[in-house]
Length: 125
Image (tube, rainbow, N blue to C red; front, side):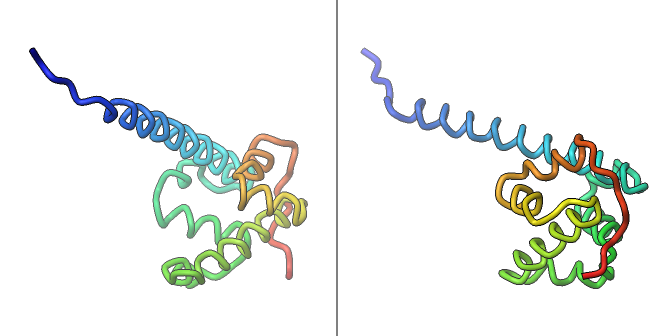
């Protein structure tokens, strides 16, 4: 008589489902960034290149390239991301509400990428 281990199959299925959800979320965010980059006159394919996509994002919001270094510092990178996302919202004529949706849910990127938002350029803070 064979014995079967029970319990691990449910855990594996749960991790598999979470993995598929996470992968779908990442693909949606990359597609939204692609559209945002194109609206800003940058190459859309830059959204799929790690580090380079941050460089292009900094160009879009009018921040210097050395800010890439700030993304490498723990805790500071969260603050810099909020600033960059807010400047991205402003660059498309949106406000703090879109920034919050971008940072907390990722939906703000979809609003900028697929909505009627037009790129108006970097805004002075």
